[in-house]
Amino acid sequence: MSQKNRDGKGRARDRMREEREREKTAEKRMRLLKVGGTATGILAVAAVVGVLAANSGSGGGNDGPAAEPITVGQSTAPATLTVYEDFRCPACGQFENGFRDVIHELTDAGTLKAEYHLVSIIDGNIRGDGSKNAANAAQCANDQGSFAAYHDVLFENQPAEADDAFGDKDLLIDLAGQVDGLDNAEFRTCVQDGTHDDWVQRSNADFMSSDFNATPTILLNGENIYGDPSVPLTPDSLRNQVNQLAAGS
Image (cartoon, rainbow, N blue to C red; front, side, top):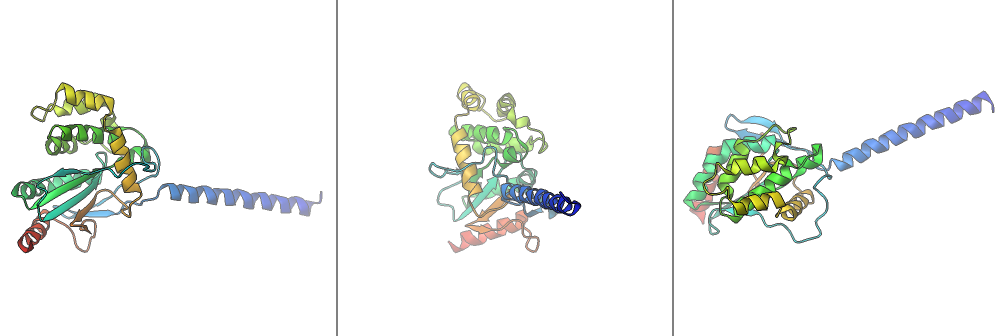
C-alpha cells in the first residue's frame, strides 16, 4: 500500500473517531433532556440553579394513569399553587425555606390550595434512591393526614444534593418522630415496603414528559410565576397575587 493510501485511510479513521465522539456527545445531550433553569425570588432574590432532569434512573415512561398530586388546602380555594419538586433538589429546598410560611398562611386562610407533584430526577442524574424514598414516605404521611408537616421536616433536614441520605429508610422513619403521631407501625411499614413507589415513578414520568424544564417549577392558577429574573417572586408578591385572585373570585 502506498504512503498516500495509508495517510488517506488514517485520516478516514480519524474522521470516523471524531464522528463517534460527536455522536456520543449528542446522545448525552439527549439524555439530559431538561435543562435546569434559574430560580429566583428567595427572600433576598438570590439566584439559584434549578435541577437538571435526566431521563434515567427512576424516570422512565408512564404507561399507567397520571399520578394525582398531593393537595394541601381547601378544594374551593380561588388560587391554586402547583409545585413540582424533588426532595434532593437544593433549589427546591431554598424555595421551601423561603416561601413555607406564606404558603401555610394562605392555605390556612382558605385562599390558596397547593398541589405537590413529587419527582425523583436527582436519583436519575447522580444515582441513588433518596428522591424516590422520600417522596414515597411523604405520600405515606399523606395517608395519615400529615403530609404538610412531614414535607416541611424533610426540607428542613435536606442533605446535600450529592448525599443520598434519604435513601436510608430508617432515617426517613426517624424524621417522622418530629411530626406528632406519625411514627407508627402503619407509617413504618409503608416506608419500608415502598408502598407508593409506583405513584412516585408515575409522578416523575409525568414531569419528564411535560413542557417544564426544572425543579422547582411553580405555577399559580396555571401560570409559571417562578424563575424569571426580570419578575422575581417573593413571599410578599405571592401573597399579593393570591389575595388579588381571592378578591376577584
